[in-house]
Image 1 (tube, rainbow, N blue to C red):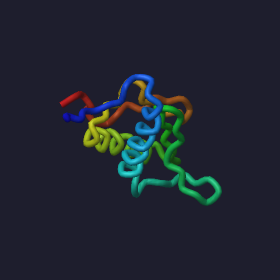
Image 2: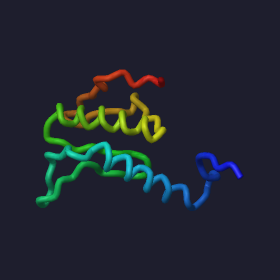
Image 3: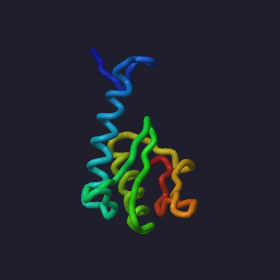
Length: 103
């Protein structure tokens, strides 16, 4: 039996598997980053469905987080939409510093 990627559309396991996969990717990518604290806890991300909000006090750190997330995401076989990649600090747009076109 050959096992491939994915689950059937509408499968109840789909969101659970995506969340596990996404959590592992995010933890690996953002390890060592963190200057945003709430109640003494370092907070890297806020997640909703398949959206991630990265949190940082400095735009340079935020850009480094984005770069690392894209790099590790590729290792996990995940493609991320560069067009949806934005920074909400004063509603400025952050352009990725590296070329993220498909290899």
